[in-house]
Amino acid sequence: MSADGMLVVLTSPAPPELFSGALPEGSRVVAAGYDELLALAPQADVIIGDWTHVIRVDRAVIERTTRCRLIQQPTAGYENVNLEAADAKGIPVANAGPANANAVAEHAVMGIIGCLRRLREAITDAERGGWDQQRWIAMDLDDLYDRTVGILGLGATGMALAQRLKGFECRTLYFKRTRLDPADEERLDVAYADREELLRRSQVLVLTLPLNPETRGLIDAERLALLPPGAVVVNVSRGAIVDEAALADALRSGRLGGAALDVFAEEPLPPGHPLAALPNVILTPHIAGVTAQSKRNILVNSIGNVARVLRGETPQFVVNHPQRVGA
Image 1 (cartoon, rainbow, N blue to C red):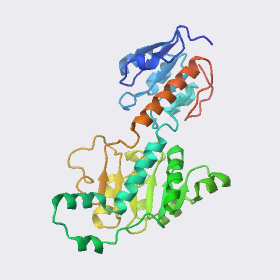
Image 2: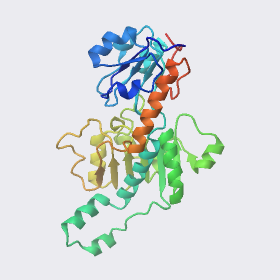
Image 3: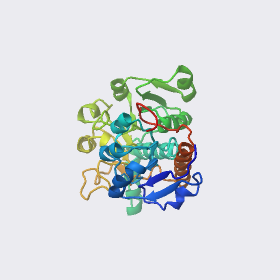
Image 4: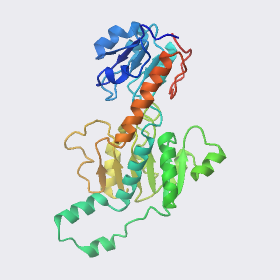
């Protein structure tokens, strides 16, 4: 299939040349805000989503499409795209695949160990000077060795994390909707547990779930109460999966031992947020997946996927279930 006259509408804040130079000859890339996207939707062969998640590829946009073959989201998350509308219209929606899985998994390991060793409090104490060494000895800080780590969601990031945890000789549980086959469980050294069992057993809980209607608010006060006393929560997925007020209460009361959070329901984190002042919380500004390598991977995967579709090939990394491919 020729790319002559094919239109790619780009909503991410990037120069069109970043994408157009790698696409088949004859294709055109046009930068657009929401209003322009809405106007161009009927002519768009491909829509590239906004990696800042500000511009939404919503139902109004999707229903105006007449020839769109792909909505490509250049991130791991895709909550700014209306999957239900895309399904009904028969348009595949793709993310960037496992592009930043290694980076996010490494960040999660950093968060786990940082919580177990009370890193934020330790840095503050060391920088202040004159610390009480005996106080730290009396704390009985935890090793990751021999801990039970539960991973909720075992996609590319969860599997990359499980692979890294093998070296720490901890017990790794996982829950996902479709259980792995036994060979993959053995390769990753993970054991399946249903969600409630995983929560009850996890001394460290790591969230690597996508945000969707089923997972929004999933980790609420009731589920946090299932975790063992002193457990650590690490969230490198999406902030809205966790009830942040309930988490702050559990941390403040000492029911939970710590949390490492890279994502939040509202970003940037508003001043005075209840999690911001707690000494047993490590906060980072949504940077787990933005290493130099992962950014290169995201661009390569996203641009390559758009090029595949413009050549008439089947897209990779599809996250929805379109009723028919093409338009």
